[in-house]
Image (cartoon, rainbow, N blue to C red; front, side):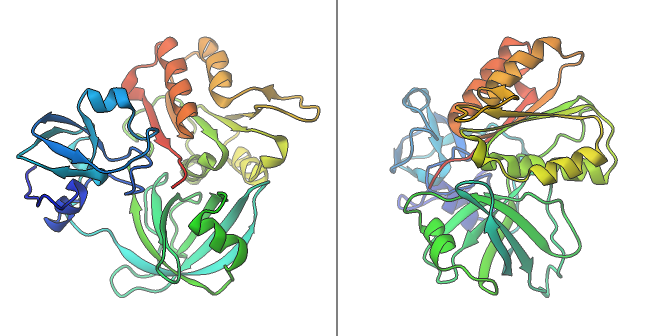
Length: 329
């Protein structure tokens, strides 16, 4: 795949100008979704988060497409195949805010309704596990959030969003958002989706609002009456941060083989279930697995690293561990 780029372009913007849409998420150097390896050539990196690209990774030649400007011809190696590359613009649609309510301590649940669109109709068409980018009504900020519901013909989008201190989108949700608001939705996007070619059990390891894409995939499994073994390791720091437990119970009724482990890192009251992180619960469970599972991990970078280490230690092949980082903008 080849495209031209000006020295003032980021590689991601240059590719999109050539109608090549490469995997990305935050577009601000915070998530690592657009990380590739530089085989040759010179670049300049703009500011980025070390959680998205460590110094060791940078020194080995890795770059972030959204934060890299070219200084010569470049050859890049991508950790995805051509099926992950789009050649049509990512849809942009308008949606109305239908519901905004607390979701545990420090998070909220949003429900959006797509407006009818002459090109895309009214349905919410996406692959379970994908995310969308939301733009504030005044256009001042854009943020990416995973969808928690399954694709549907009704045009509904459900999201769980962690409220960040002084976050641009969080401040809107705390103080200004109201039902009836109109937001621009760019998506669907993302490759954190279930591998339908694999018949292996699916184990989901999630922290906080990283639960959202796991809910989407599990709801899709429930709709399809998928009978493969599946597990959910859901962790929070404190008990009061749990949310969507009623949704999990509904999924368990439809997927009776689903085993759920609720994890609290530092319980301040009596807690009878797992004490520790979802990665620690995963490490404890893997040695007793009768089949090697596909592992889907979503949450903060430390959870991703710990779960990947636990998987490798138990002999899970690297390409059977799928992950998506949740980081603050």
